[in-house]
Length: 318
Image (cartoon, rainbow, N blue to C red; front, side, top):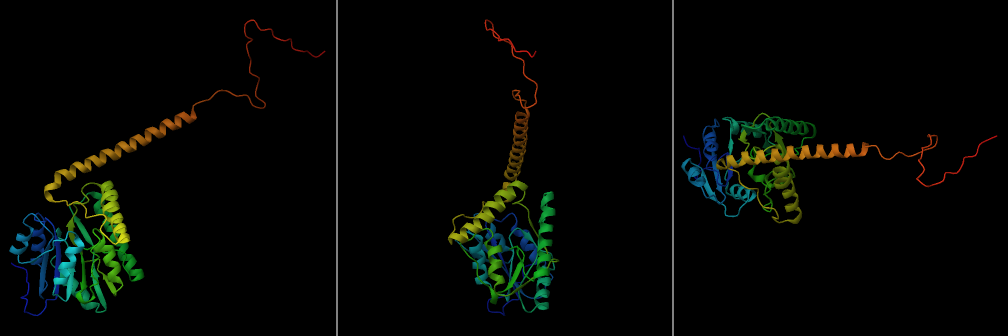
């Protein structure tokens, strides 16, 4: 079974699915197979943007019927920009090369656009494959909060780039100075300035948890704190790519990921134990008794005369 792409001279397809990819040979086939199995009866094309891969990413994409583009400028925003500009579909669906889609993913997107003709985009949540326990709980709470915010305000405060579709005529462009976060927070800001975005909480996709496998602390501090939040802010503020893309994590790096997680866990436990020990030592030092001092109303302290000294007689009352 091949992806139902259309001939360049034929009528434009309903959807163009754009997938940026850098050395994604270990994940891409499952992604494309899930798109082959879509129940959507209309036409759609799949565009894989090879972002300087050195593995079989481009060959796998071509073998499975996707259109393959090559973007030499590194960065996810460059890749998504190139793919979207080459897209011919009425609606562009953005996703990732490590993401598996349910069979009704495109059908639900199509239904949402038809139900909301005034909407320029439809976004949905993602779930994680084989996640650590906190990567099950926190994302569900996060996307539930997005759904509540959308219901109360009619606006989104976040979208994931692995599950958003927008009308090609409303495409605002990506800021190619940005890396992680540029295709989500910044793109949301640009897209939301063009019109209404519908949130579909019941059309999730399943994506890799590889960036979370290094542990909660590493995810919060390094992945989200440094490579996402700081990179997004600094690159936007300077209007240039000061901080580049985060290091790639692929299947062959699984043993390194486990080792890093163990190192972060050991470092965290050591830090906590050291902090507890220092706190205990400080408490004991402050609570230790000091030299006795006489205060008002305290009994006099007896002193012993030094040898050879003459004690003056005390006066007595008569």
